[in-house]
Image 1 (cartoon, rainbow, N blue to C red):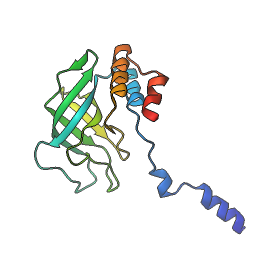
Image 2: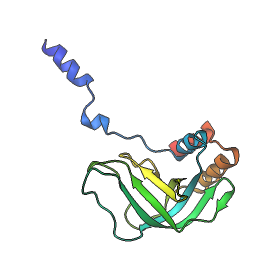
Image 3: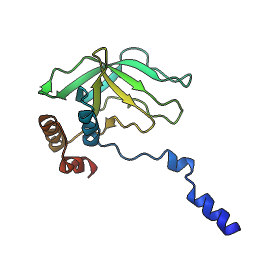
Amino acid sequence: MRVLLVLVVIALPGVGHTLSCLRPNPAIELNRYFKQDRDVAVLIGEIEPAGIRPFRLSTEKISAAYHFSGTAYGMTGEVRAPEKIRYVSRCAGNWCSSVPKGKRERLFVAVKSSDGVLEITTGPCNEHHHATPEDHQIRAIRLCFASRGCSSRIIQLFDD
């Protein structure tokens, strides 16, 4: 009976397993938005709060304005970078991801909201923030937009 109990406990996912996150891949994310026919952009640069940095006081989602400086890529190639974007956290726990702090260039995938503002939406795994891309990864992202999809080869570039 003890052996059965031990096996059941081992087989059940624990908190550590349920909150483990895979490394985010912007190519997979772009493919998902392309299939949904969403107006999507890739932003490479820095974001800073456009006021007081929000912090979580309740279990409500957080939506805040941020300044963006950098380069933006969209369906027509390099596009005019927005000065303001919206950051939305749809996670309501203290384990949730947040906007990277400090001046560090990163890659963000943003989707145009119904009011026309580019939004970076994230959950517990920080899935829309990516490390600073290398030049060959930026070229790959541009190919994704040109063909309205990222090939498995391009997806692998971000997994290596």
